[in-house]
Each structure stands twice: as structure tokens, then as C-alpha cells.
Amino acid sequence: MKRLAALVFFALSVAVLAQQSPEAPSGFDNKSNGVVDDATHLADQGVFEGVEQVKDGLGPLYNAQSCRECHQTPTSGGGSQVTELRVGHPGPHGGFQNPEIPIAHGTEIITGRSLVNDRAICPNAAFPTTEIQERVPDSETIQATRLSFSLLGDGFVEAVADQTLIELAREQCRKSHQEICGQVVQVPIVEAPGQLGVGRFGWKDQHASLLSFSGDAYLNEMGITSRLFPTEVTLLCNTASEPNDTPGPDGLGDVDRFARFVRATKAPARDAELAATPQALQGAKLFDKIGCNVCHVSALTTAPAGTKINGGTFTIPEALGAKTFHPYSDFLLHDVGTGDGTVQAMQEHYGRNMYQIWKNLNVNSFASSQNRMRTAPLWGVRLRPRLMHDGASYTFRDAIMRHRGEAYRDAHRFERLSNREQEALVEFLKSL
Ligand code: HEC
Ligand code: HEC
Image (cartoon, rainbow, N blue to C red; front, side):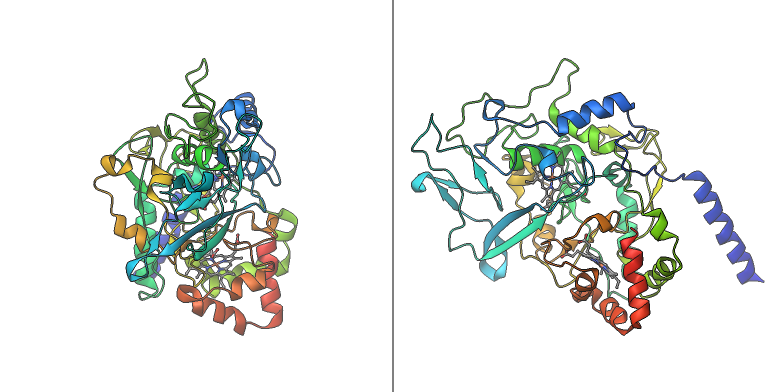
């Protein structure tokens, strides 16, 4: 009787929760999820797609001219095949040390970052002998490439309460008897000096805030300085005045509009036709049964509208508050045997004077992420022909079989499924 009562109570509370938390809108229609009106969203998309030139401050070192170059498919804000190069070398006790990359015939050494930019604006007509292209020195033996993410629906991810992720990590560890324990990393909120939040963006969970990430990407991918990241990586060949990104008449810089664009995107929609097939439905059940959903969590709910996040600098709007969405990720770091050996570089992601500002930062927690990666969110994974952080797996089966470490048992359980069951599970992944 007691058990029945508990079950009824559980069913009721699930029903109440579902009622309280409507589904986040999904789709690839370039329409706003409600954070702004459609016209504003389209204008923000235009800024996200803007192609920067040298006169705008592009470079001196950079990877691409526009956010859209790497975040594009099937629509602006999606992912792409573009990978980035990160290197470093082992330090004492095997830890990761940032690389030292000489440019301009060794007259300048780039430090404080792990990223190696693939492009540079000079030598050019104005600076015909200034050789600044970064190249990997032989000393940098830890080498990794990392694939671009889709940003669609990331506003919902940002709006998940820190506590939700902390509890998720605790529960998952408890339930799996310490076998699967996602790592939570507290990271600086760049727009709120001194404040921390639970990291959830990037392959190493290096950011909690989309505004922080936008400033980081604008500098490190495109070489555009902003109020959040005012210092160029190098001043060689630099001609534009700093910061390159200045606020428009409405007081918003490009970085603010990038963040607003991403916050207003809808979540990736599923392939409804495929999702409804008996095979994909069976695959969904198997996915849960063999424990894939312990890390690839199928549903999360955002904090209520009005909640202040990002060190108090952002208030969750109605459109993002108390919404349920389906990312198939816990946004935690795990060692599944694919760790790339890198650790996020502090200055690169949080700014040059970060050590003065974030005195309470636990740098050790960063070091222990060396062989961990964020659980890749599987929403929209059907639109991504290259899989895993390095893009080196081309089939779902290969991606699954690469899971070792914390996910060893799950990969093994997949291996032991019958052929038909394996196919059903893959069919389910193709519908996400
Ligand atoms: C050269 C390619 C490239 C360009 C250009 C680029 N990005 Fe990215 N972006 C990436 C890669 C690669 C990642 C994964 C980074 C990592 O963790 O190493 C990423 C990750 C992100 C994330 C985190 C998404 C998530 O779900 O974790 C955000 C947000 C983002 N980029 C925003 C931007 C914005 C805004 C711009 C333009 C200012 C931009 N990016 C330009 C390649 C790019
Ligand atoms: C312990 C946590 C964990 C478990 C359990 C787990 N995964 Fe993963 N999964 C990850 C992590 C972490 C990555 C990213 C690894 C990388 O890129 O190096 C990932 C990546 C993936 C990818 C690649 C996605 C992409 O966008 O590149 C697929 C597909 C995938 N997992 C499917 C599965 C399936 C199916 C199962 C069950 C058999 C499973 N995973 C179990 C943590 C887990």
C-alpha cells in the first residue's frame, strides 16, 4: 500500500512538474524563441554573420572572419566541420603547460593560451616583412583538434541553475556507485569580475555565460577586442583602434548581440518522421536501458524566469524560464578515455589580468580536467557527420566504441546487444 502511495505521489509530481515546465520551442526556422521579437533576432543574426575585415580589427592572429564560418549548419548558429588546433607540453608531474609560440622570427613569444591560430593578417602591403603566422614548435608534443559546436538552443543551457548541474553530478555518482562521476568546474564570469558559475559551454566546460563565451570567441577566433577582452594577442601589424568592438547607438556591442542571438535561438528539432518509427522508438528504450542516458541526460529544466545568473548580471527572461528541453547531455566533464590532454588556458578564456580578479578560483579543478571532455550533447547529432571532440569518428558505432573509462561498461553493453538492437539504437541517434 505504501509503495503504491509513493508511486501515485511520484506520478502526480511528475505530472505537476511537466505542467509547470512547458517544452522549449524547437526548429530551424531562424525565428526567435521569444527572448526578442523576430525582427530583432534577424538583425542579431546579421551581426553574427558579419564578415570582419582588417580595418574592423580582424586579427592580427585569427581563425575566421565571421562566427558563421564555424557555426552554420543547417542554419546560422548551428555547427560545422571546422576544427581548431590546441597544443601544449607536459610539465612537472605530467600536468599540461601552455605552449610558447614564437612569431616574427622569435622577437615575440605568444603565451597564456593553448589555441594556435590558423590565419594571420600579415605579411601584407603595409608590413611586408612582419612574419606572424603561428606554427607549432617541436616542443609542443600535446596536440589536439576540437570540433565546432552547434549553439542552437544554448540559451536554455545557460538558464539551467548551477545547483541543478551540481545535484546531477552527485546523483549520477551515487547511483552508479562512484563509477560515473561528472566533474563540475566553477569558472569565472568575465562580465562579473570575481564571480564564478558552473561551466557548461565548450569541450572543457570553460564558460558558464554566453556573453563570456562571445567575448572569448571574438578575440580568440577573430582577433576582435571588446570591453570584455580588451587586449590583443599581439600588436604586430595591428592598425585598428582598441577595443575594436564599440557599442552602437543602443549601447550594445557586437558581443552583446552575439549572446542575445544565441539566447534567442530555438532548440534543435528532431527528425519527427524517423523518431516515430518502431525501430527508433525501440532504440530510445535501449539507449536508456544500457545506461547511455546517465551522461546523455534526455531532459533538463531551466530555472524560473526572474532568476539572476552569471554573477547577477543576467536575469532569466520569461521565454527561457522553467522550460524543459532535451539536450542529451549532463554538461559535465567525464573521462571516457578520449581526453585530449589539454587544460583550458586561464588568460585565453578569462582575460589577461584574471589572476588579480578571481583570487578564489580553484585552479586545481582545471588541472584535473586534463583527460576529461564534456558529454557531447546529442541534440542535432544527426546533422553532424564527424563525431567526438576531434571529429575523428565517422559512424555512430565507432563513436560509441571509442567510449572507455567511465563509459566502458556502457560501450560493452552496446557491444553485447544483438545486431538488430544495435541498429535500432543507431536509428534513434539518427533521429536526434
Ligand atoms: C574558427 C571557427 C570558429 C569561429 C570563427 C567561432 N567559433 Fe565558436 N566554437 C568553435 C569551436 C571549435 C568551439 C568549441 C570550442 C572548444 O571548446 O574548444 C566553439 C564553441 C562555441 C560556443 C560554446 C557552445 C557550446 O554549446 O558549448 C559558443 C557560445 C561560441 N562558440 C560562440 C561563438 C561566437 C559568438 C563566435 C563569433 C564571435 C564564434 N563562436 C566564432 C569554433 C568557432
Ligand atoms: C560516462 C558518460 C557517458 C556515457 C555513459 C556515454 N557517453 Fe557518449 N559521450 C560522452 C562524452 C564525454 C562524449 C564526448 C567524448 C569526446 O568527444 O571525446 C560522448 C560522445 C558521444 C557521441 C558523439 C557525439 C558527437 O556529437 O560527437 C555519441 C554518438 C555518444 N556519445 C553516444 C553514446 C551512447 C550511444 C552511449 C551508450 C552506449 C553513450 N554515449 C554513453 C559521455 C558518455
